[in-house]
Image 1 (cartoon, one colour):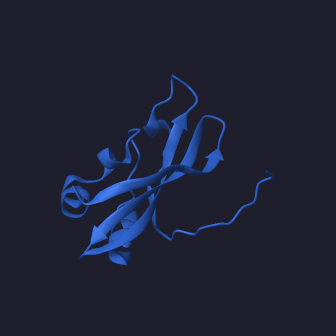
Image 2 (image 1 turned 45 degrees about the vertical axis):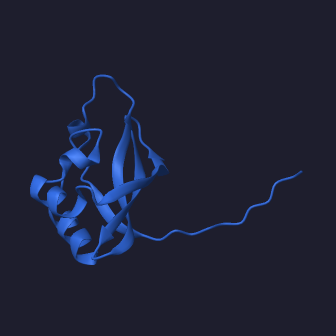
Image 3 (image 1 turned 60 degrees about the vertical axis):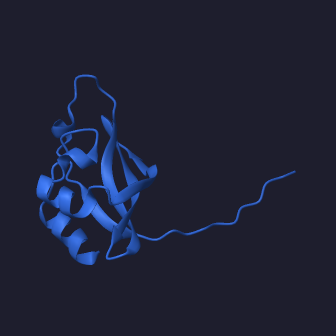
Length: 108
């Protein structure tokens, strides 16, 4: 998993569409992602900027029979109809994730 994350980050993949999958080089997508992952969560850790929002998408990826969680930092929202994803010059960022369960309490 660490090698894949390093490989993806080294490629400096510019986000040019609303779907991160479309920006992954085809040969890497076919080898590592095609029919091999599922999205767990979207729009985590939202970071708002003047013209756009960044957030983290979490996917579960199966590699060598083991399941791993990978985070992908993406542009999740553009605020202007005139803007295009490539106008933001955001490079996809990939990182390992870990699921953490939190206990909360509510008033009954």
